[in-house]
Amino acid sequence: MMKRRTALQIGAGAIGALTFNTNSFSQIPKILPADPESLIAWRKKRFGMFIHWGPVSLTGKEIGWSRASETNATKTDWREYDQLYKRFNPEQFDANAWVSVAQDAGMKYMVLTTRHHDGFCLWDSAYTDYDIMSTPFRRDVLKELTDACKQKEMAFGPYFSICDWRNPDYGVSNDAKPGYPPEGGKADFDRFVKYNQNQLREQVEKYGPYLVFWFDGEWEKPWTRERGVELNNFCRGLQPSVLINNRVDKGRKGMEGMFAGDGIQYAGDFGTPEQRVGLFNRDTPWETCMTIGRQWAWKPNDEIKSLKECLNTFIQTIGGDGNLLFNVGPMPDGRIEPRQVERLREMGEWIKAHQDAIYETRGGPYKPGKWGAATCKGDTIYLFITGAIGETIKLPPLSKAPEIARVLNGPILNHQQEANELRIEFGARKPDPIATVIELRVPGDALSIEPIDVS
Ligand code: FHN
Image 1 (spheres, rainbow, N blue to C red):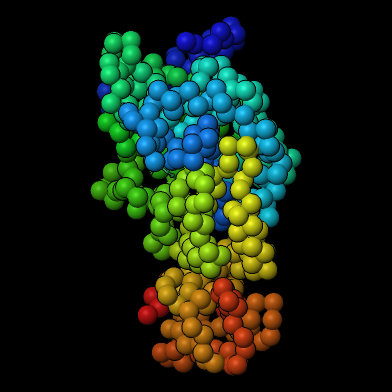
Image 2: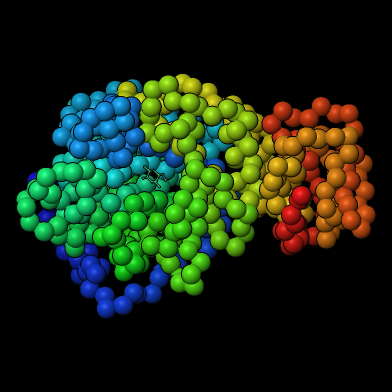
């Protein structure tokens, strides 16, 4: 049942239809590229908070994927799942508190599941009643969170699932629902694409500007390259400065997350390795997305990763020239659970103590590995030594021999570079339990040094 919309919204929708009529292309249109300045600014942020949340948190099971045709330990029958919103009342939701948790962790942007595969909308949408305003909570979560982000200078972007397993016009359901779509008629995919476009437009108009559109769910059959490029260009039309991940089109290589590398130019501004650290890559911007526990949405007694594992993931990611989008799953009462808050606070403490080596850096020139990782900025290279550290640190030589070596914010270290080795005298100092960060000053731009493997 469509909500009553104002004449303006209907007018906007009609204009939209004229501008971006769906799938009327005989061939794939030109891909509108990203604003280079937006990519540079996004890369400098290095670290973001991913948030997977919705009425499903009432069950403690996975968002989207637990919607099924039966109920058990990991599944909820869709007849129950789709009614959860009637019980969703996160009275302790506090957008300012969420933003403070992200800031305390050293995160510079946030991405919220505004609409996941289950189709539930965490904002007041004029285009559906399956949204937060139909819950007992009746508060616009997306407005409160984007307002808090603006006040605290935290960048924001919506996660928006291209697939919607509840919407009969999408025509693909993740359960054995009889007679799907329920009307018994054909799924109207053009109408579904228009629905998506209307929702994306209303989001930007009500809550923008956005840092990024984080699309997902592009892998299913109904989505095509034509739709993907159309959506990419539609989003550029909504906000020219916005970034768009590579899940807008069909070019992502599974959970490895980078582009297919098949010679086709796909839409999307950055790769999205999932639940793994991406490979060292300075040519294609990328961002690893990973859970702090084992599930994306909140799970009671989930196994929270250790501080060492969390920070090692972060160090390996930024050393590979990627960003890290690290996920929390808030509880049904609206709070981020204290164990996750504490882990993020501990991460932030370490990150803040080493921030010169992190923000506004690029990865390399030493490639990440068991030894550790490296970042660089201007004429400085930062070594993050995570492996065993002896009295003498030995690394391959740099094409620009370092002039100074020192512990970050600490004492100068003797060093010597010969033809086949750079040696740094660390002595009997106590290494940092997470990573010992050493600063090397080189003549000229450190980024121009050819990346080096460390065995
Ligand atoms: O199916 C989703 C999953 O629920 C989660 O949102 C991740 C996060 O990137 N993306 C998809 C799985 O690849």
